[in-house]
Length: 461
Image (cartoon, rainbow, N blue to C red; front, side, top):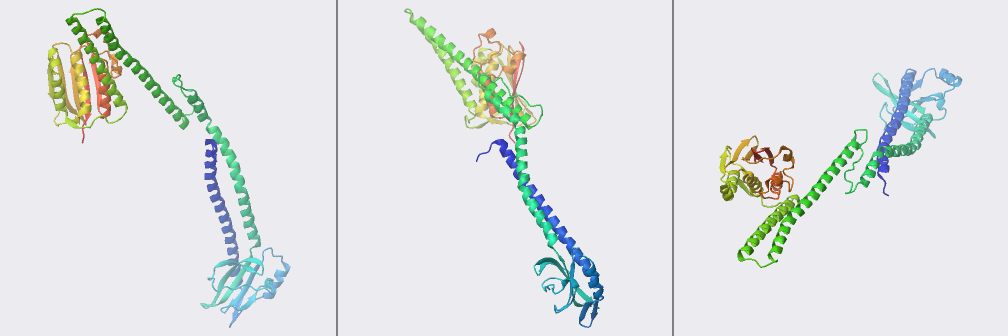
């Protein structure tokens, strides 16, 4: 049988309480039983000590003194819980007994240790009995046996046992009903959360779960769900924006290519005109291919899979390789390169990821640098990181655009710099690669002064 959450809480609470209650009832029962028997044993010991002073030992005979007065006293008084007393010698033979025993006789058990108390029967009557040795001049002469009826004590213990056994299921049933009611009230906020989340779809992701007034676990759960909804909403918005931007970026070269081809077929052209238009079309195809490759690369990063084998390479060598690879572009803009290494130890970095980072950052620095200016690369050490700073003396970036710089397709003031080509994916790829290897990237920039990117590579111990 499957129970709902409310009934499961009530059941678990009831089972736990049942175990505790059963232990408590057992402790009460055993404590009462022990107290009852302890009182009986004290009474038996007291009676044995009391009547041991009334014993006369003559040769091999042991008997009570003033037994006639004892019998007369018992005859006059009504004894509610009479004490039976009996004297025996070392061989277990009866020497004397209290008048209330009449024709009956207490049993002597040799296996029982001296001064021990035990339960037995007198005819069909349950009694508590004790055997205490009688000594004279350091020699044991026999035993004084005392006994008292256990019927009233047994009845008390039996009634207590029945009361506990009957009250136990009643208490548990009442406890289950109360627990179920309290559990129902406790999970009311959860039902509100369920109702709220059931109404939230992809079309109204801006709605949130109402927060309860008390800052408890339910409050934390509601806050966590709201944060999750916020992350989902942001992710969907980024996906929609990414899809829109990607469609736009791919549609532009396709439209340009289509327009160029349509112009070519309207009328006959000269050889040079055909070549010019074909070259222009090929450049648009190259641009579109570059965008597709970058999109695929971003998608592979988002898949969280391992992209390439993590081969390590010295950071200095990798920077030098990237600068050499872009030497022609640097020469075309007449840039001066200032490459300075201040690190005392050689730092190894993952070749694939670090190459993506440095390639995109350095290409951006070259692209946005002003002609004849200086491109600086500095490698230094700071605590557990190796820092690679790439600075240009270019157009700079607005402060309000820095937070969006690593978003796909984002380009700061793209319309004001139409001569600078690009799709706005390079820094997104660099940021993904930085995150993949546990590095850090920061950027500082001033308009018309230049931009500095700092990549902090974590040094391996």
